Image (tube, rainbow, N blue to C red; front, side):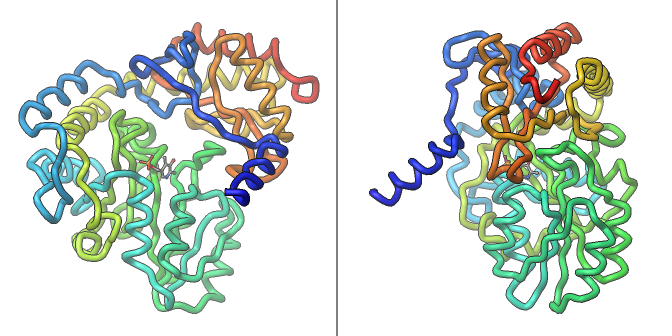
Length: 387
Ligand SMILES: *Cc1c(COP(=O)(O)O)cnc(C)c1O
């Protein structure tokens, strides 16, 4: 415990202690946070489906048919009709042969990398990939090479020089802290050239990008041969919880047999699968949600430029404002909170030192007036160095 106390102290001295807030009520543009009404710009509920009444009804329907718990792992007796139907619908939605549900996106990434790679293989990852892709590589015990962010030529160099029986390139489709998109077409070309498998984690692309929200990979026009491993999460734009991997028959069968985070865990509640079937249908049909969302992204970017904020080149609902110093980012976020606006200050170790930022995420539930309110308070509270 002394050692832990010392580590905690060091983190506090560095001003990097993280803490939780207690929210109440349904997800939405406004939420009760620590007992106070706040305007929220940090949720991943991009399409505003997390509290949609049709999803709530679907959960109720699911609970009355299946009960609450799924009772066991998928391979024992936890794999319900609802799970199975959702897998078929996700395969169809993503244009892949088959799809497999995981309880979380974090576990899906551990599962894929652990099942497909071993000590004699080689894994290539973008420097800014999500923590779960990095941890998956560690668990697989495969040698890992990280290429500079979005640098396809750099990756090609590493691939050319690498040994390893199987090579796998893993990338976020949309980078979670910067909001930019991976150069998927170029990555697919380099993967084909070097006989490497390409895996895309589309946690922030599914539901948001591409025709009918089919994701970054569909937006880039890449099929199952070019991107054989597609991972998506259900807890962001789709508004529920869990994740899936979609791809060729052999991939999915191999995951069922070998992916330990699939095999040794309880299946997500069937009612959540039932609700996700509904949200998948809504996400595909209600194009107005994406139109509204991207209208808000444009409004925010124009307004932020007008008041002189430093934005990153992101075209997605993830809109970071670069601050630099972690202390400045924290005090800016606190000033915003005092004005009733909640957004996340992202600091090391999540981003590199000197890369601290305020991360704004937009949702179809925001109104244009709420985005204007955000811009107004940002302008009022901006630290001298940033405005
Ligand atoms: C959120 C996220 C995950 C993890 O998904 P969970 O379902 O929340 O565990 C994985 N990858 C990326 C890029 C993410 O943003």
